[in-house]
Image (cartoon, rainbow, N blue to C red; front, side):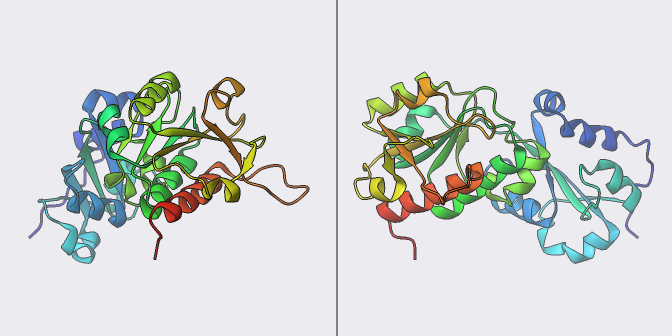
Length: 264
């Protein structure tokens, strides 16, 4: 008979709940993967491997194919106490935070990168990670002051892509520019006042590009956009103020990736 963890005083709960916070993730050097999609990605990937798996009795049967490591079976109440969401899906895992890629190697090995300046909405970041992975970008770079990519909301919104897309955190714009210039990678500022439309620019897209996006509330600072090699905008119908950041990023990634290597 399977032993089931039922105590709401179990140290396992405190260990998992600590990963809901940035401080807890930093201290443990771990993060949380919740739901079958994230756990499956963690199981199949060589990055961010599972350190401990937790399942309910129902999930033990439902998700048996995902159980590559021996799980701790917990009650529904314990799972609810561990989860960062209101409706827990019955399966979650703690995962190791591996060392992130080297910036110079990433710029040298890539022809399409995304840089986000002070992005602060976890849902947007997770969606951008998912879009970048799905549409052919080779990596994502985050400035200081950006939301933690290992935060539970980001991990969920990435829909498993966090385990596949290389990303780097805490990279200053000047540091990125130095690395990009060394490998002749051009910088493209995505801004509402861009000189070229995305459709026009894609026709002359450089072989190596990094698209630069500002944050949700303020966009890209002028002092950053004017230092970029190109300033590009996405034209919109009259009366529309702006596009959602994640939507803008997806459009740019798709257009650029398809121009470099057609997506079929």
